[in-house]
Length: 332
Image (cartoon, rainbow, N blue to C red):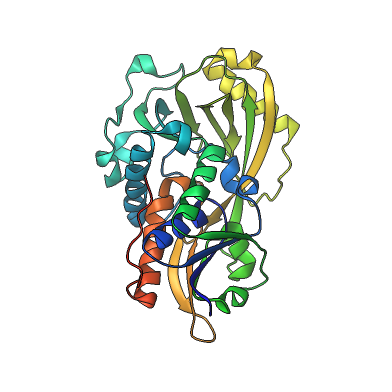
């Protein structure tokens, strides 16, 4: 074995986990089949909010840990891709949220004049909205500054990584369905439309829990992201033209100026949902190595990324002991 840790998977979960490990003094390689801009993370609308993720008893702590990181990163949005942006969660009530909500500064019930027609309840919040192409590049640079290395490499089994490191961390998202033989993993397909922003400065979301349709728009630099869908068990990656038209129409009912916005592109991605919720646990590998799982984050990978990275890194620390090189610190 030539190193401490190999993290497999190059999306936001893999990158943040690798950063936490590298900044604690570990020797870290990150192996990824796809470039960061080709992962599901790159497609995400990326509003911080615990959405479609279990188990609820742990999600709150993971989400808040990540929120604190993003709040610091928002001081330099051009570099990190993180901004604090106000908006409305239509149809949501504070009483329906977990204890974590009390620790989100400024989160409150929306006033009647802040709600679109047809909604009688909602929440106002100023929370992180993350420009994922920029943020993924920032994560990669932070990992490299901490001494981690990135390798474009697909694997057929975790044994390939276990031959080269004492600990292997599985951050492969839907790939864990085959690599970890986990049939609890299923895709939840999301489709987006990118348009020129007609002047919208606040985000909006409304989730229809009774259907696969959601309605949201997120103002990102140079574009407005419109969504969306939550189609369970759907593996299609090609955007559907009819779905795109429906997304545009739903968003335009909230903000009519969206109807005339010029379309810049279409995106589709597969959220890695898991029936039993996020899996963060360790298991032995043949030859004395350790495999740590960190996958199944559903629609909230960005929201819980740093909290889950710390949890996975803690398991690695138990196996590896204190790093000989001491702790490295990357700039926030």
